[in-house]
Figure 1 (cartoon, rainbow, N blue to C red):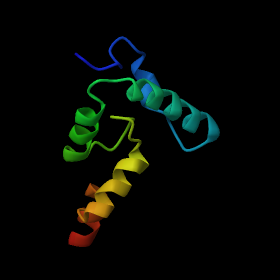
Figure 2: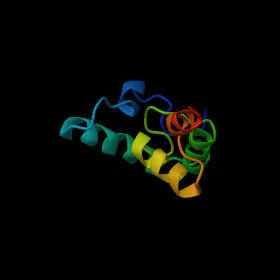
Figure 3: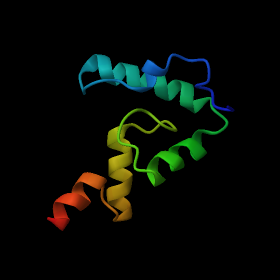
Figure 4: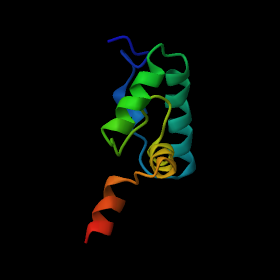
Length: 84
């Protein structure tokens, strides 16, 4: 409701792949996030709920995985693999 992304094309926040076009799209999505009053809340929510796709709070999928690894919690896929 208070996000800068309200009214934006949702597809912007879900780039597909890691090619140059996808990275450019992610950068465009992050630019929207950087002007958002709830950016930090959004990013924290995505981390807490282990959201695996899209740009949330200016964090890409790779950004969130790296943060979770640094926190020592791993990602959902990593935890499942270790349990097997």
